[in-house]
Image (cartoon, rainbow, N blue to C red; front, side):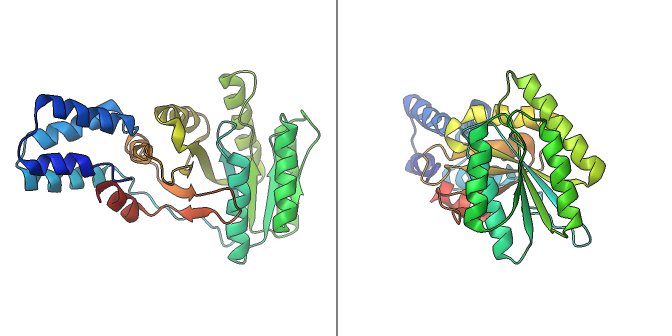
Length: 278
């Protein structure tokens, strides 16, 4: 990724022309950091001596990462419920299966709920994943009320002593408000019969600043607790992870690194920062 390597090389050269500053600014903006954060970095770089600037920028950028826990919550005395939210096409359903696999491999009993009843392909996809990872899934009729699927899933999970319930939700209805209202209903129904412990928003890293806009909408609607970032691996636009945490204060908990069921890794903030600078 080495997002800041070119900037640090230029600073250490001892002489950066106005045109070079503009080129550096353009490079950083194209990495999806966002213009405001880029300008903050550039101003810092211009105002200090080379070694001081490199150290200062490193500290500044590191401070933008969330200080909240990146660990997935687990309630030891009751069912732990996780909602997976996000727009269609981000890898939401696949991420649901990946988290389930991780939890199952850690020795947990996991139930899935296919609450995206408005898209038959989503239910079929989750059923396929459930068969593959050998865990049950609760489904509903096409276009049925997602909240009814959630109610049935919570009832089953509590009756059969599941440790985790992971709910795959809808990512698209007729308009944004319909989607947010539907997700809000799912959260209310879940909380009435159990409790929502995590709301993980799946964001495609290649969508850049649009991903940050998505985050703000979902945070306002359903109280997101953390992020799963897909397609971050090898992306020149890796700055979006930094920008999302800076602008929301919420942690990235997992990174999707491929299409396989095991291709999900905890977000390592230290390695990420090193990757931006080295």
